[in-house]
Amino acid sequence: RKEVEQDPGPFNVPEGATVAFNCTYSNSASQSFFWYRQDCRKEPKLLMSVYSSGNEDGRFTAQLNRASQYISLLIRDSKLSDSATYLCVVNKYVGDKLVFGAGTILRVKS
Amino acid sequence: GAVVSQHPSWVICKSGTSVKIECRSLDFQATTMFWYRQFPKQSLMLMATSNEGSKATYEQGVEKDKFLINHASLTLSTLTVTSAHPEDSSFYICSAREARDYGYTFGSGTRLTVV
Image 1 (cartoon, each protein chain N blue to C red):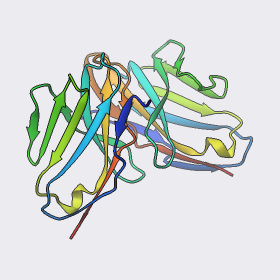
Image 2 (cartoon, rainbow over the protein chains, first blue to last red):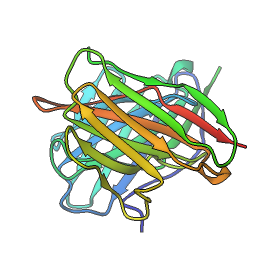
Image 3 (spheres, rainbow over the protein chains, first blue to last red):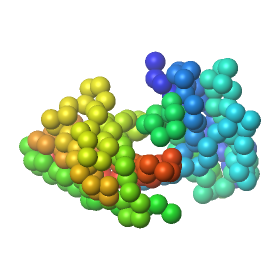
């Protein structure tokens, strides 16, 4: 079983749509959680950290359910520029190696 | 913000040759460097972790004699793919961490093609 599992997609949505991605992780000792964005043939870039209480950054909302070992990302009012691969990432403690999911592809179309 | 310069961005080499990839932290001291590999449509897989001045710790299944990592200074880490073969063709990317800051700064990646 992979440490971090994501639906690969692709999710094809129209501009303005709301889309949600899910992720599950297998290591219950994981302490830190992130969503990264990766554009084609580029390095991943941090989108947001995920906190137990849930957190929001503009159109993006992340949720964490430790009991179910489940992380989600909600994108509201999708833009064309949101098209990318979204990577769910965990690590066991601050400063430890990051463990990446394979990513979920989002394509926003006009 | 923190920047990691990774070179080369892409390289094509013949089978059997060696390729060196460099990652330099430009405005901070990278006490730890993580090296990842990403095959098409797959996740980034950690190859090894190196701390400045120490030998790298390799993940299970990664050949340390084939993927030589040097982290001799706080601003430079290198990955050398020795005797490269077509199956080594991949996207290699480094990620640096400073001791005082728990953020991770990624290099821009190196696309290696072995022909």
